[in-house]
Image (tube, rainbow, N blue to C red):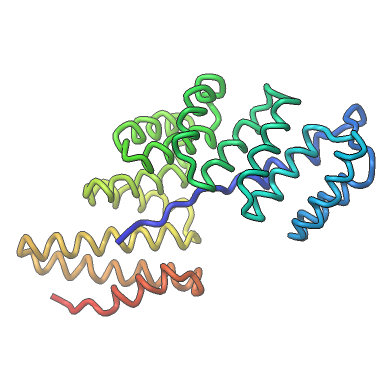
Length: 262
């Protein structure tokens, strides 16, 4: 039983930022860039790359062009080109907080956890209030087994972002992996109260209830176990209603539904 963790999810936010804040002083006036933005929005990533390459050959590429190129390659599953493109973007605007965040997003998407940790050790002190950067740091630490250090980063993040569902969900996952099911339950219930329409939160909460069911069975607390099993079934049903096509949710639903009552 594994809790599903989310990784790359912030790239589109930076794309919107680039669209809004590209001004007349930014040499992206050629139509190729804006056409590439539209193709990206339409999920025509290969076409967007082709248009951006025109800018490169014409010597008109800017940090926005390289950033958008990175986002396209990320969507295409091409780590090498995605990462080299975001590096080129940062060379042109090294102090940009969003580019730093998106570099981490690309690394996290491809599970390059060691590199994420190394960069976060540099970025977190520079951008201490950036929730996404600290999230990637905590996620990478947890993925490398440094659960307690990851939890300390989450606590620091929650001081400024107490209702950020991402931190609460990750905190729940970490507590689950540590078999601290009661603490996982608190974190995930808090997350579900903030975002009732998150299938992953309800899925993960169902797994915690399932674990607490088996824990109570072993302790001989059958009445409590029955309650946890019922709660697990309710949670996984909510997850399935929100995302009926998600494979892991369907698998969890079948397994939990098949558990006999104590």
